[in-house]
Image 1: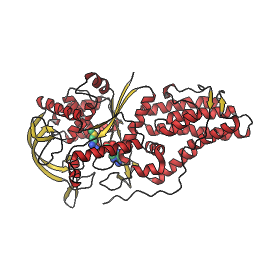
Image 2: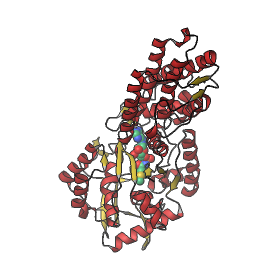
Image 3: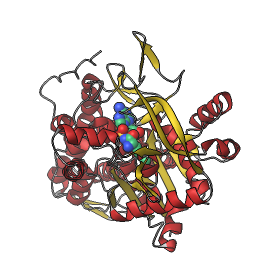
Image 4: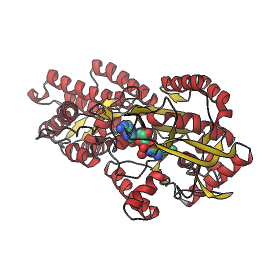
Length: 508
Ligand code: MSP
């Protein structure tokens, strides 16, 4: 049986997740659900990145112990993922005992191999990114160094620390990035290669003195330090699949690892992560799938910029299926997608309400009125018999190349074909329109199955009310249903009544 291991980044729980985080989590969810439908044994991992200065400071500002704070936030994140029908198999927290043990062992192993050493470090740090910035990487505002992503001043820090010999991995990384097809889309690998070639690689600090950052995993052989939060966090991908305590489970999953990330953390997931894996004598992941940003008023949606749209707001407006569909539909790996309620409203109305929802409703009503809900198998119109399998093939190709947005559009195209077919065939004018209705129901069935990883609830409702099962899309064939039993004509998507508010302007 095919194993499919898929992960999201683990999120900083310093604030509520917003639609930017939902975008990644949903993207992974759609792929996980698709793979499950095709019969693969899926392990879908998401979770929270709970250590480090950022979390320590937020907890302090709320007069809470960080552990109390992250415990509360873990429940909040889980609640949001549930409200979006996210089907993760495990929610990892970097405060999990097994994770902490794994990080300590891995750190010690790498130290013993000579890749970690002690020395002085100084530089400009962004707490939001939990990262040092070197000249050329930051921007200068009124003579002060600023983080280009968060638009906040960088903090000068100087400390005796443990370094990780990242520089030793340059040739290995270039070889992997150039010759192995891991990073998808490919141009992201190219970006990293160019940066590696033009700037080279410097060793990075992988520990923090406890006086400054005490909220983290202690360096096992020197309790005056905690392990750098990124080193800790990246290891979640292997700690969750029992790297430490179950070799078989680990090997089975690791060879099928697919990481989904936003392009902001590409460097960490190629250069830092691949080198750590190498230092642990492990292979890089099977695939690193990178997507672009969800922007709002032109800037990456983020709490510190002040231009976020909340998940609640989206859910209230479009419901679970609507939100899932729209976030999938606007997802893009190469280009940033601007979040605009105006655009989403029009896609929601034209694709879900007027196309798929309308087709289901009108066919359901006609089937009941004209045929008592029972529609027996008839032959499929030759035009449809030619067109539908081609569309299914295109959908499968899209999913195979992780293009969930294209897959969603193909499913809706089939519903559009269904509406056109009805407009031409005019079943309402016939005394026995069962042939036309069988054809239309077949289009609905195919569209519903193809949409099942996305509009989870609508697909379930339609399959139950119309009497068919959500089957493996790889085995989807026309005319395989002997009889439809239409019990009800559901209204799947509510019409929007109000005009949406636009998201707030980013603060300068
Ligand atoms: N904790 C680290 C990741 C460690 S993974 C070993 C982190 N967390 S984060 O909370 O900042 O979330 C980062 C991820 O959230 C991004 O890589 C991206 O997948 C997602 N996104 C957050 N805001 C987003 C947008 N505005 N647009 C697209 N993705 C967004 O970095």
